[in-house]
Amino acid sequence: MSVPTTNAPHASAGPSAAGGEAAAAPDGSTTPNGTAPNGPDTQNSPAAPHGASLDPDDAVVQLLTPAGERVDHPVYGPLVDELTPDTLRTMYRDMVLTRAFDAEATLLQRQGELGLWASSLGQEGIQIGSAHAQRPADMVFPSYREHGVAHVRGLPLTDLLPVMRGTRHGGWDPRAHNFQVQTFVIAAHTLHAVGFAMGIQRDGDVGTGTDRDRAVVVYHGDGATSQGDFNESLVFAASAQAPVVLICQNNSWAISVPTRVQSRVPIARRGPGVGIPAVRVDGNDVLASYAATTEALRRARAGEGPTLVEAVTYRMGAHTTSDDPTRYRERAEEEEWRAKDPIDRLRAHLLATGLADDAFLAAVTADAEALARETRAACLADRAGRPEEMFDHVHALPHAQVEADRAAMSAFEAGFADADTADTAGTTGNTTADTTGTTAYAQEAR
Image (tube, rainbow, N blue to C red; front, side):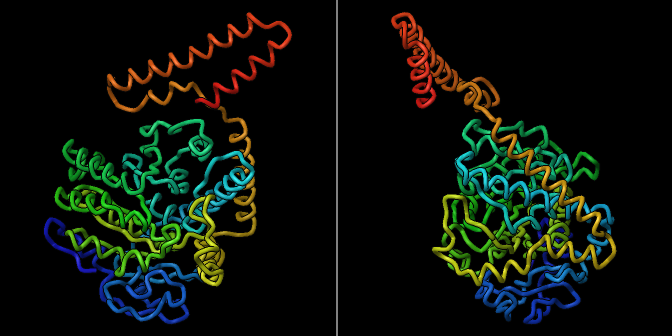
């Protein structure tokens, strides 16, 4: 991917390095420089995921093959070489725990305990890899599928449940872990992220060469790139040279529309079109995901501007639990991508290099099972708070309209309390039944 040099003096050492790499073999193996082409005609189609690229600049950076073999890359390879064995084992554990949590949450929705759930199955590589590249001071803007990122940022995964259970509008303090609440309006948060990045830029928290430097990371799907908000965010990010990394989890399907229909060329090309360096990375490769995000964040914190990272991955499950993927894609496609599983490939690498053994794997499995039990218990114990809570964090400062709405809600609730009192005073034998019915009606009205 060609990279503009204006206001990006070191960009050629990062995102642009993916350009002009040699093609991968049909079996999915990569060349020694760690790239696997995925051209515009193939996009994410597993029928020919490693076919000849029509544009060599569309090569996908890969450092760990599906078989778990480590391959080199002149730019991103050294960044991964710095990772310690403990960090590699932690990445593996994080991916396994994230999947266990996701699986349990999906079961809870199927059993009626959650209203909806968006699975992250298959996307653990880009999420865990990119999250490990971040610093605590960096601010993250998720959409609604970034369970692995939340986990690495230190947010208890059970805090993701209340909004899907309908008991909270958010569920956590965004400042506690610099992890914003989820966004369900597709692509709206990309503008929020760029605006926040412009804010810290003006606060002097970028380009100082000190620990004060920070950046913003925003996650979105391939479907979001069809929205106006996303494209506007690119324009503002480029114009302001904002310290933001936009990570597109291109999971092949925006609900029922394949990426190759949404975008006739790789999504990463959107970046250079407005002056933003971009890179395509194997999103099922946790190491390549880490390295690409590390370089992008280095640029952002140093004041060198934004980067667009397109992570080529696959949504193994349904878009959400209200979706039926069997209506628009084939099982053979899913099976081909299952062979590229991010957890399997890192486990194979750890075992082959002697960095993990059966005891370690068993301990991780036990931790995952414990997290699943904790997730179920937390969900079943979750209860709604006061209805007035929905007004508590709408704006940073008091707002007249919000306070008026709060007062109206309080008056509405008080009216049901009066009805309960009247029913109790006028009835002798059916007091309990009447009160229960009134309370149930009030809860339904809420």
